[in-house]
Amino acid sequence: MKVIRTISEMRNWVNATRQKGKRIGFVPTMGFLHEGHLSLIREARKFADQVVVSIYVNPTQFGPNEDFDRYPRDFQRDERLCRQEEVSVVFYPTNDEMYSPFHKTYIITEDLSGVLCGRSRPTHFRGVTTIVGKLFNIVQPDIAVFGQKDAQQAVIIKRMVADLNFPVEIKVAPIVREMDGLAMSSRNKYLTPQQRKEATVLYRSLQLAEKEYADGNTDIQSIKSKMRKLIETESSGKIDYIEAVDAETLDAPQLGKRDTLVALAVYFGNTRLIDNTILKKQN
Ligand code: AMP
Image (cartoon, rainbow, N blue to C red; front, side, top):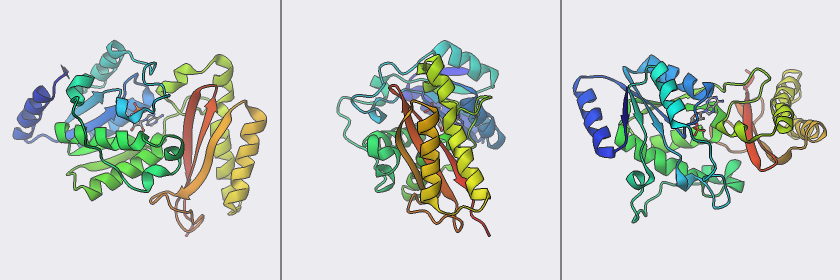
């Protein structure tokens, strides 16, 4: 496994790999890897000969008062995990390598980036699409895998790839959870033991939505208010949002008629956790 730190070296590897006719699979991450990330690597390997994982905590996707500085980092551990997963290349660039001091260009997916998480993180998705666009140009993957954990991100990346004609196929892999249901996240590390315990309510609230829907409740307002009540009574979490939107377009939902994304963001102390489920259309 190679650890590559510069764009020029990455390009050399990509050119040599393409010349051999090998397919490149790509998993972009911010590191501090967990089973969720590893599941994406395994998914990428199904469709590619060589897997590239990028580890880069991208400053442009963090707001001014967010956790960029204290975002957890452990490169040695990440490197070991990637080696175990038989990754071909870990691309681990510096900030100077990724952003020149003269950087002025951003990719914006209109409308999609202003809803859900975009309301409280107004510049977040602009940062995500910009870095993913840059990474796609550097790594030139045939396929790239993203997690359903970040459902809005997956929708936005698919839109970007279609709109800007990136020659890459996007796969979305299911949410990997801890034994008690909490969605795996590098940010779970911030939680106190008490918050960690309480945070299981997020998955239970999504399961409640699934059960209501399976039992015939198609009133999305009533489902959302039951979720809210559960979170408020069983935890100290402060709800940022609980929303239901069309799973493909992020427009107003048509519960029952089209797949509906039920997504939430909740603060436990300063830690903002997200999770979601899809209520499948009934036909
Ligand atoms: P991050 O390192 O948090 O930027 O995440 C990198 C990729 O891993 C993104 O595509 C995430 O959606 C995905 N991911 C993060 N957590 C999970 C999880 N629990 N299950 C599945 N995918 C995940």
